[in-house]
Amino acid sequence: MPVLHRYVDRDGSYVLTGIKGNIVTFQLTKNGEDRLLQTGVQAGQSFQRSLLLDLYRTGDAYTGGSGINSASLLPESGQLTFDFPDDPTSTDLFPSCSRCGSIDDLHLVEILRSKEIFSLLCHTCRGGSAERLDTSIPLPLVSLNVLSRVLEMKGIVQVEASVSNYRSLLESEFSKYWEAQLKKKKSKQDSLFAPAEGDLFSRDEK
Image (cartoon, rainbow, N blue to C red; front, side, top):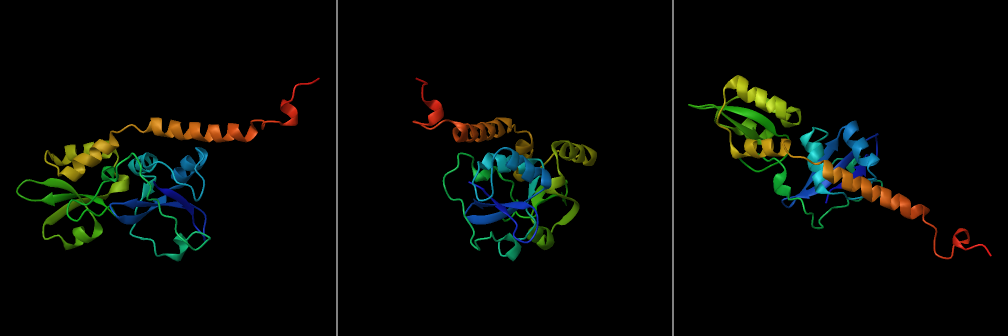
């Protein structure tokens, strides 16, 4: 399960999570941070991977090649909290590079062959590709409307599985997971104000 962390040397939050055996850092936009905080997720706490997927889908969580070695990413304790407990949402739902499987710094790329094809490629595979590449759009900017429009404008009918999977993610509905998180927050708040057994205010007046 992902874990929310605060930056040490500046405002803002980021998320650390384990994906396919690797620890991945997701930066958050202000909107992404606010959505998590407003539903009761606090710094140092884990939350459902489905929420991170939805933030990724909307562009409010993204990778940028920063890794986990930057001092600004270390919590105040100086230690990183990793999230290896089981999560019902599979990490396979995160988009990945069609060539190497990396999820970092992905772009929607047009590959020029006898028939043009769209793919998802990471920074390394874009730079080392022997194929001719044309259109290249950072994935956080690729909404469902943008993807459909680009494919229509380019007349592309063939896409690699990575693009098809990303389209499925964009079409997914995650509202029920946010609602569940809100209910969890409300449940915690109610328990704080519930009178303890034997409390003076809960005794019957005689």
